[in-house]
Length: 383
Length: 252
Image 1 (tube, rainbow over the protein chains, first blue to last red):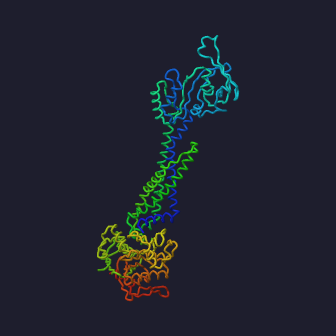
Image 2: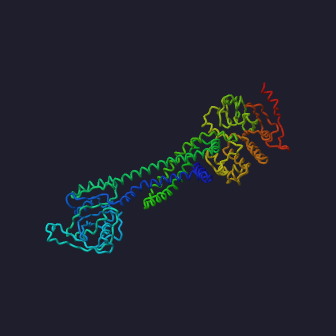
Image 3: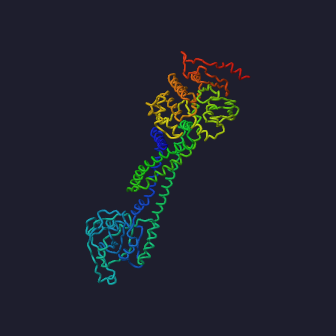
């Protein structure tokens, strides 16, 4: 039998046949590794999760016209700078004044799919308009006009060019079917919404966009860079960040990551203390065995090698357990806090095991060093 | 040349002279007992002979080499290569089986060899208990494993510290018989004991008191076999001095 074989046989025997003591040590390492691996997973997943969360708060970039109005083509050109990546949605808005029951109301023409993506927090009773001739009205409008879903609504538009000669005013009237009532708690409730095509048909004025809202999944630095690129590439477009959203996203993200990092360091320190304490107890408990080993010829290096081997093997086992439990832990946190699942990071498994082995080895050094100070003569004294 | 020679050994702790000018010789193949009451310096002497401690003064010649000034690292090597230890408390590693405990000594000495370890267990009559953990063995069996571990590396000296101190009469006899066998095979034995029955079976008994050798008795009727009197007390074969005589000598 080779020496190495005997070495591993001894270590495995020590771990297997002293199960109760070793389970306590293993548990402390595994808990540490679990929290570490879980928190690191969350740490790396938080930007993605937070980004998704913040996209729920609406657009984080807007395009305004450099001069009077924007065209859809200009918006497309601006969006093309982003190469389509990280773009959650684009909603062009065109606002016009119309009359409903002879009272002035602001109508917004937009791309319903884009608006849904950039304003995911909008609560719509019924459904978003999906075909021509359909309209969504704000809750404020619904209340003041006593309108409900399914009602037909006449919208009158007075062309601007006819404004000067009131005699010849010919209002354009279109009838829409109310499909949804918008409830946001904000000023959006006082508008009515139709598709761009319907508004163009009503006004007979194509391609006249006032503003475009974009929701982009990116950090505030990236967004700032995109905005600059877009403004430079498409002079007609003035790309700006919605500071309120991007700034708070960055602040929250930085604070959250700092918190996770801090907790990780604290857990790491606690794990080290725990392992060191357990190993000190193990060394104290095995003083006689150490004395015996030294009495029958073990060198200090052999004693260190054996105890370090045991603790590192425990570290490895704890790391494997921690990787599995850490993923479950991170998954639970993600589900309960962010309401979405996280993806498994395979690279984290070897890292967790390695860190666990290193942390266990490091925190065992002091207790193991004290093991070498055991006097072999103690085995002769019949203590 | 003697295998082991202690020349004017002193071990001093502050005011206390644990060993006070002790000299003795052990020849190769000899069976020597060291006797004495508690505090007589037996353990200190055992530590020095077993290379686990160094004397304050004097020389310890093992195979003609003075080991009294060696570093603890070198003493570990000497202990590993030349001395087999047997303990009163057996000191088997509790999570290793009997055969693994024997192999442990091989592991530190050279290369573990399970076959050889099994043969050593066979010599002490424990081949069938080789895969048992110490907790599954009786005291006598544990001591026999300890003997097998001590002899596995063919040491020059087997040093036994109260080897029968924790054994009943039957097991005591088994262990002493084992020593007898080892002695017959040419092994040098040094047995530290306070049990006269165990001490007397040796070829030579050295009696310590207050750190001094007060008597060295050669057993003329050496048989290597233990004898028990009917009452369980030992049968005196030597003329050890009485307490009064020793006290008188000390006062001089």
